[in-house]
Length: 429
Image 1 (cartoon, helix red, strand yellow):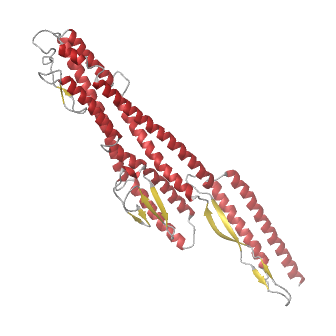
Image 2: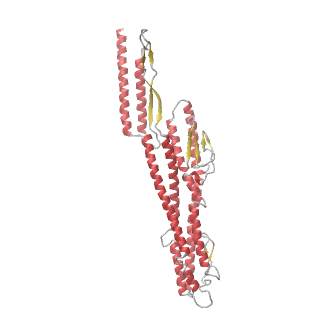
Image 3: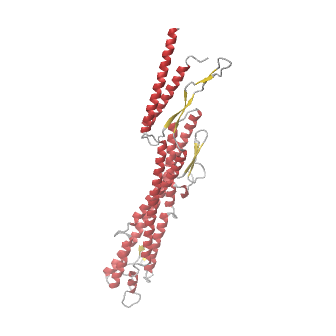
């Protein structure tokens, strides 16, 4: 026997399915501009059919449809694009950090300018040339001392600024990875969401808003270092972070702090490299020390009585000479061969070493900026592709809204027709 109100139940299921679709479309439209929101769709399936037995031995019977069931409301998400986006986000964040910090290093050189090392070295050689012309002049001797002190102080200043860039990178790394830093906070939020999502999943629910929050945190975390995400059967995820030996998040457990290296990638990997003595800033400082050492050794070699400079690096170079201690010639006779010898150092090994150093910094910054631009372009392309899948198109949602409204109206008309038929039947009986 067919239940009396089967038709009404069938029409009601259509109304409920259409209403769920309308509500979900409204949610999509409302969140069209919400960062990190993932478009949702209603999934439906045919309700179990009702078997109608044959009325005679020759009949085959039939199956009667009973409407539609809403099986779930799911997010439209492409896992491959998520993985691709996060990997590219790691590369882009690493490139951005490198380019930014190396630009600061280049700014410290202040080249070309009248206050840069190149100009100060030129002034220093010129002061010795003037002294060679008039070796007994007190003013010329004082000018050599003054220009030497200015040169030494410029070396000190550039070295100090490079050291500051290096130490700032270390401080920034410490702040991000500290007990209350960004890594710890994001990891704890992911662990908390893991617990809430697992609980909802066990209850047969699909917590789309919680999943969106967790995906946004994973996207953010990927900018700090490379991540690997493994989905668990209960809805939680295990997150491996950088090159740490233990997963950062496993279920509701957070393991942090851990040791990372520059191979971790992302912002943290770049900061570790920049703060290391073997990183690009450390290499720049070593090259600058080489220039300072060349100036110290070459000038002191032409001042056999007493050294003009003390120190061994850009950070420690200083003038030890006085106007009276400057040796202008190599014999007791008049002349200025030593002063002229120092003047002739202009354009020599020290100047060439400094030019090579400036070129090293410039090419490093240019390469970093090129990598940054390329990485950002790829990230934008991947982001746009992911947005085309998971983002909300208002035109598409408005089209869907009209479709679902018509489906709702059609189901309502069916229900109204059945109601009229049943009332007529009751009246006739």
